[in-house]
Amino acid sequence: MQNIRERLNVLMGKGESSEIEFKSARGGIPASLWESYSAFANTDGDIIVLGIQEKNGTFSLDGLTEETVTRYKKNFRAQQGESQRMPSPRKRCKDRVH
Image (cartoon, rainbow, N blue to C red; front, top):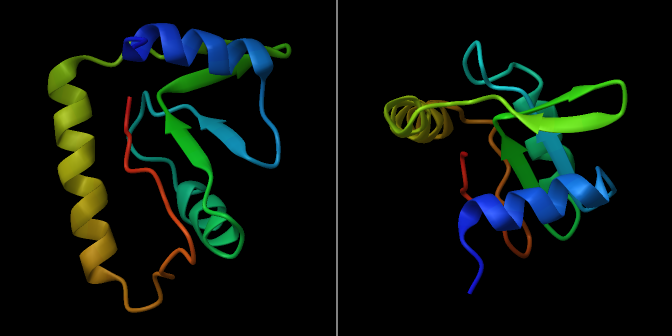
């Protein structure tokens, strides 16, 4: 089984598509996450990966620490619970913040 870094490298090599979207998270959970989350919830769910930045069509890791990832996961779950307008994905939604 691939470790998470290997899987991310494979995904970054393929780039974004209608099934995967990357978002930088160096400055916190991006506000644009919720628009993407909602859009994906209205499809097959698919994958949103936080912590990957794009520059000139090339994707790279933001360099988030394990502590930061843990904090983001807690914040993400808290924001989900606070929102009455948060959609429920019809099929699946991956909860991976790396």
